[in-house]
Length: 315
Image: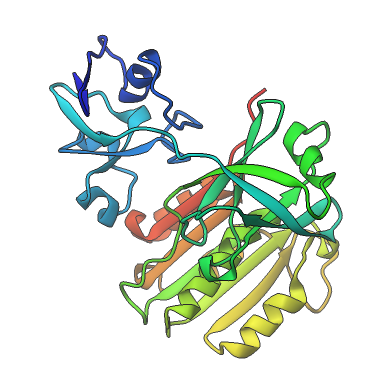
C-alpha cells in the first residue's frame, strides 16, 4: 500500500511503486525503468533497501529511492510523487562547436533549481521528450546543453533548428551525477566521450567554485581529433586552476595534442591509486558501463563511481 498525502494506493502483486503510481493516474517522472537514469527518484519513509542500492549514501540517508525498483512489502509513505513542473525557456545562443554538435544556452523564465552535472528533459511541442545534461552553473543564469544531432532525431533535429529568441520548454532536474564537497583534497576523475563533456564541464566548474583543492583529471574522448570540442575553453579553465588537468583521447589519427587508444585504458591509468579517487563517467551508455565495470574490478569502491550513461531514445 502506498500513502501519498490523503490518497491511498494499493499495489498489485509484484507491482513496483512506479507502476502503481502510473496506474493510479499520478504524473510521475520516469525514464529507463531499469534503475539507471534515476529519473523516478522519490522520497519516502523507510523505502525498500534494494531500491536504494545504486544511490549515493547522502541520498539514501534522506529517504530517496528509485520507484522503478521498489516493491514494498508493507505500507510505504511517500513525501511527494509529482513530476517537476515544466519551465519555459528562451534560446539565448546557439553555437555549432563540432560536426553535428551544438552548444545551446537557454534562459529560464522561472526558477529552475539544479546541480551541475544533472540532466533535464527537453519537451518537444509534438509530445516527444529527450534528456540532456546541464553544463552550466546555477550562477550562470542559463542552462547550457550540448546537443548532438541524431539522424531522424525528432528532438535533436528540432533543437538544432532553433534560433535566438525561440521558446523551449524543459523539465527537471534529474540524476545524482554531481559534485558533493565532502572531501576537498580527494582526487576526482571525470571521463566522458562526445557530448558526455557537458556534465563533466559543469561538475569540474562546480568543484572548483567550491574550493576543491585535490587533483582533477578530465578526459574527453572521441573517435578522432575533429570530434573533440571546446578545447580552448577547457585550456583556459585549466590555466586558472593548476589542480585541473585536461586529457584528450581519440581512437585514431591522434596528433601531439591527444592520446591515441581506448578511453578506459587511459582512465584506469590516471585513476591510480584507485582506492582514493572519485569517478564521474558520462556519455554513451555502452562506454560508461564498460568503464564503470573496469574501474570497479580494478579496485575502485562502487560508492565512488558516479555515472550518467546516455540512453538511446525510445522508438
